[in-house]
Image 1 (cartoon, rainbow, N blue to C red):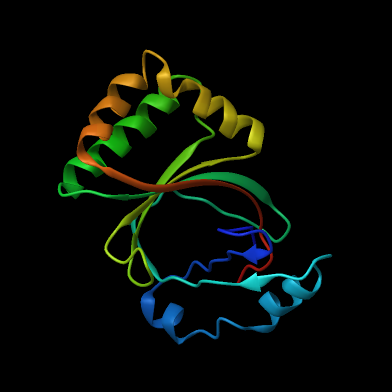
Image 2: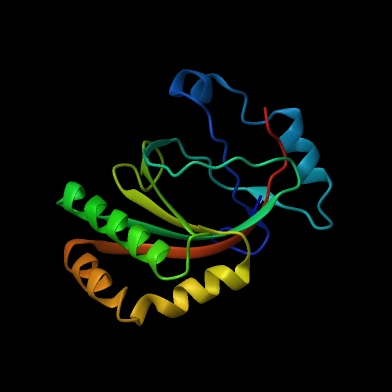
Length: 168
């Protein structure tokens, strides 16, 4: 659960092994409802989107685990080339001391961003994510970011500090 566009809003997501289970699931399940009621302030769930996984690095989280994300919503006319650059950035990061950063890409299937991509840089905590972002102008990242900037339309970016509330 995290804030979203406006103060008081909650953005939450589920990851499923396939779309049949994802779309067939109850988005207002008891785990989500309990997590919302445990918050100290009133929250509104303003949006729930469906995504397809395009690129995903392996991960295994347990309830209570925390991590930080930098999420970028983008559109591109050359998705294959864009995905190659995301992979190049992930590889370069690992070669330059950021082996704890993963890069994942999702395709929006619904909502206001349907048809766009969400690129996620994920770190074990906010400090590591910040260090990664500090390196976007470094010798190893800047050339890749320059290529990416020529082939995407940047729609929105946001950071999140996350806590896992349920694992099945």
